Image 1: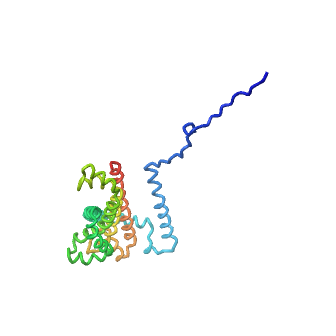
Image 2: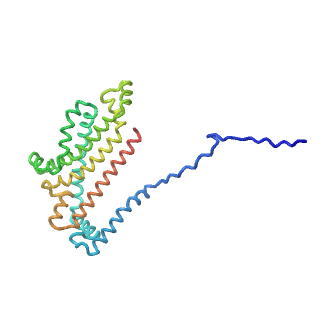
Image 3: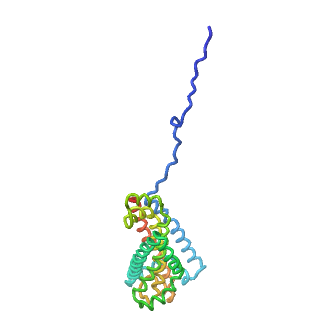
Length: 277
């Protein structure tokens, strides 16, 4: 009797039979964790600041301690002047940014959609963009006086150029296939812009708005050099003249906090808007 070996079946596993590769777990950071991570660098800087102010390398008039700056804050609050400085600077930035960003959106859209408009307007606008902010101050004073007009106008100038540049670039580089599809569905003019171009260029537009807002905070300091008696820019110059370095550092910190806060608000609007695009 012959003994036969048991039949062996060879099974080749296909892609559908293979076990899925283990995926790398994504670490989700809560909003509290994100805040704590964002506070790491400020805390480290605060430690270096305290160390530099107390190790004898700087005189107290050159680099006051963080507690001295906090004392200056309490002093200005007790005088009743701190919040008025913050409020007037914030008002100038928001009004100037609204005017400059609106003009940048409109003119940037025209330049981005029309090659002829780009040839006519872009060279002149880019030339004015190279003019330093302080160079506008004497001219604005001659034209508008020393009140709020020149200050808000200077902030608007600072906000205009980043918004104009990014909006024009976003529209120029929009996907032409999407534009053709929109036209095939009968869209033209304003309906084409709102229905196709704006959703396509929305991330670029918001990037320009955030740059314009940051530029507004830079220009407000120059704006408040124009015969101001209030504002964080005025506080910087006044504290320099009176050798109050603690108030000077306080003004710088306030500008940083306000700039970050307004940018965060605009970034939140951006995230929520882009969900619907």
